[in-house]
Length: 488
Ligand SMILES: Cc1cc2nc3c(=O)[nH]c(=O)nc-3n(C[C@H](O)[C@H](O)[C@H](O)COP(=O)(O)OP(=O)(O)OC[C@H]3O[C@@H](n4cnc5c(N)ncnc54)[C@H](O)[C@@H]3O)c2cc1C
Image: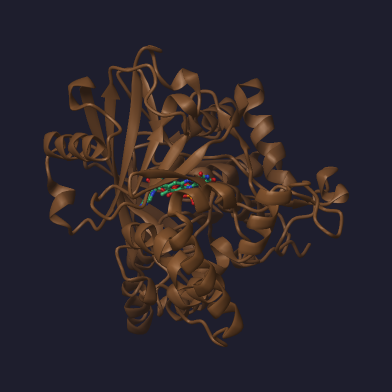
């Protein structure tokens, strides 16, 4: 019997097991899918490798950077970044650069944006509840409309006024328009207080063979020390009694029942599904709170294009409202090893959908046709150059921050705290918009809690900082291991 049963072999679950191994505890990781990595997996299609989206490895937490280096070593590359916004048949630099944005918008539109920005700053709204209030209040309505609204609504599938301001605060709190303009015009690289500003991050780390390589390497390291990962095992029932989980039950891909027991349990499966799997069932009001959690689903159409170069970006945000795709990834620009033949390009077209949408059920051929048509419409690809394609669907890619989610999560959290040997971690495990680094950090904390630490796993990534902005003081650049949410 392993010391700990871990549900899910994404970054959070695998990091939990990896940290447990370092602490001298054994684990068994159960993964519903046939491969590891979760949303951070890499899919291989005839030698063309691609992510679910594009996964930059970027963290302000030194401990996480150390873990990545330790797991992958020299296959962990430093890559240049170029990403732009495509809007009204033009490319705009992203992050925004003043000169480029002015040229793209034209003087008249730029002046209107400036006026609308001034108006917003002169009459700030005291209490921004929605994403729309929050962003328009800081950047002005016109800039919000051009650079935030269309893309955000494509991603979330709900109007920006129904998205909680929390999400904006978490993602773009410190992105000051003035700072971006100042940086673009007078870039000294230093702020008033002498900090190095790397707001406009132009490099990131990335595994040579895509993010899944990190998680495959982690799985191998676990197996070498006798800590197995069981793929194709979906946990469907979590039996508990007297405030403790006793056993989890699952099903293999062949439909055979299987069960695992340990002293402790760590779950990265979606919070809503975990609550529904509890046996005996959770009280009615807890089940009702779970049913209020919502998720946005995602599919990517990959086109194999008979051209060595299509565009120089790693990815392009597609703000143009006339097409459904939200973003295009160009995987060979992430790492040249992502394509088996340098005369070919693989593009990942990203569609943000609900699994109840008709489009979710379209067959692959129809989705590939849609993607090819939209790329042609944007003037990016000649349909005659598309020689193959594939589709990957990913359910629950995004936990939704709507107006009721915080209350629902609080109810679930206090109920789960009655089960003393169960912790939840990760992105959907905590219903938190976590990137890999924060998902991993919750796994490190959960492992350390099992050996007596008292970390608050739920506090990770509540500091509301923007992913794009990193202020490095000399002290933190020096490898300080201090990390958020750590109590012990
Ligand atoms: C489009 C997109 C782009 C992204 N870009 C970045 C980026 O650039 N950088 C970055 O750091 N992060 C990025 N992320 C976020 C990153 O993918 C997640 O933070 C990370 O994968 C979360 O790890 P996790 O282990 O918590 O969850 P997941 O990756 O969701 O893993 C959970 C695992 O649990 C398994 N599971 C679920 N239910 C069960 C069950 N009942 N039984 C057994 N197993 C189960 C799942 O199959 C899955 O493998 C992106 C996400 C998306 C959607």
